[in-house]
Length: 161
Image (cartoon, rainbow, N blue to C red):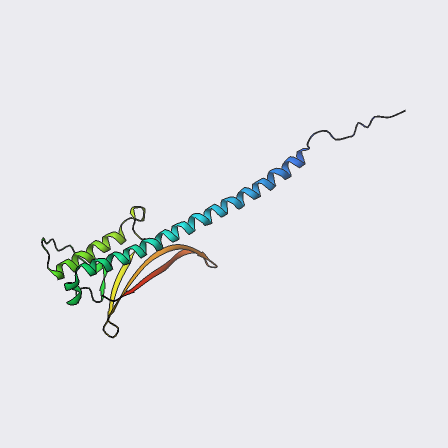
């Protein structure tokens, strides 16, 4: 005679379901952290691309105002130095002021509209090398051993006009 074994397991126990849910939750947290890191890196590369574009923008403005370059209108200037001269037509010095004003407006606009956070630009001229160094700085959110914070980033372009 055979006896039936009524203690055999049928279905899933509550503990097995709980373990499965915990494993899935840990997996989803890992995916979320990867997504967050990817988003942060995209933002960083976007700002670096904008800084590159803005550096080349002011160099092209300088190339189109060669007389202003020859008279030193761009030498050792800061983007914040520019003012709107309100001229039409403009002299080479006024055009340099307008270029700096428009360059500063681009960099300091809202980051959602294409600006850089705390964006600033400088143009330094070296008499020894006859080269211009365009430096653009901005702030980025970073996380290091001390925790989250802002860190200044820099892009430099060296040209001879």
